[in-house]
Amino acid sequence: MKVRVSAASKVLVTGGYLIIDSRNEGIVLQTTAKFNCTIIASDFLRIECPQLHLKLDYPEAFGKNSFIDKCVIFVEKFLGFTLKGHISLEGDNQFYSQRGTQYFPKKLSEQPPCDKIIDIQKKTGMGSSASLVVAFLGAVKAFSKLDFHLHPYC
Image (cartoon, rainbow, N blue to C red; front, side):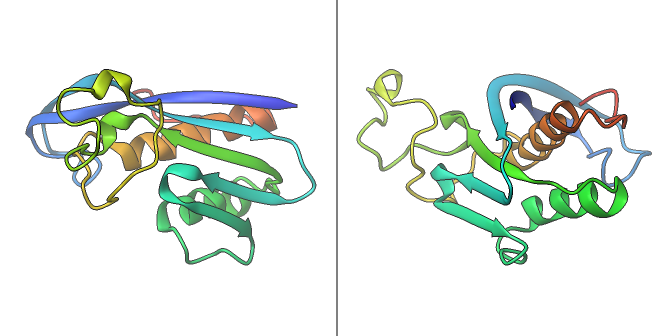
């Protein structure tokens, strides 16, 4: 079995993050940048993100990436589903600044999709972490056929 889910990113234009405080108000715009999550059934749990040079074999990999760790813990501890599969995570190039690459500024259209990231610290602030988590949990939901609900705005 194979499942692929994409989650769009967002940009907070003004206001405060609702996730931090539910009393906050803000204006958020969806962008075209997406994170993709593909799960293929297997007898073990391996999570790869080639862009970030990550290859995580669980449970040994706990502690290597907090966002992915929290997703795995949520699925296994709170949903009671033993996650097994080869999971691939890929983020669009728009999540990361391309300054200092051979493609910037004139050849961005020639850059391969989901290209390797030169410097992970050069994020653009377009919600790559949130998009990764939503794509991951959406793919797990489709893969496992578990009946849990993501927030209606996801």
